[in-house]
Length: 98
Image (cartoon, rainbow, N blue to C red):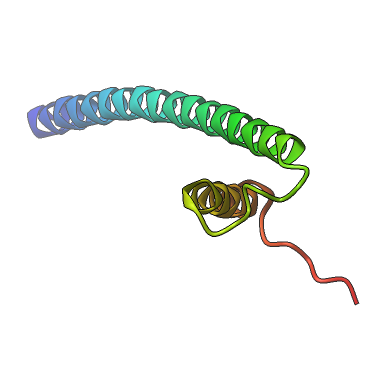
């Protein structure tokens, strides 16, 4: 009888500890999820800003002077490459139409 009481106390203690750990881990998981949501919002904001800058450069560059092989052209091409990479990350791979 005493052995049964001791085992019940031990099992109750273990169950309480496991419940506590699950509660702590659930809180950590919620914090990490909030962090990733904030990072995603920041990434989308930055992508939009870069896209707007690129569109403004295209609008200013009606003669194609930025796209030449000088420093401005290199910057223009790098910005275009970054936008294309970000577009692939945010939109997923582009589907080829047949």
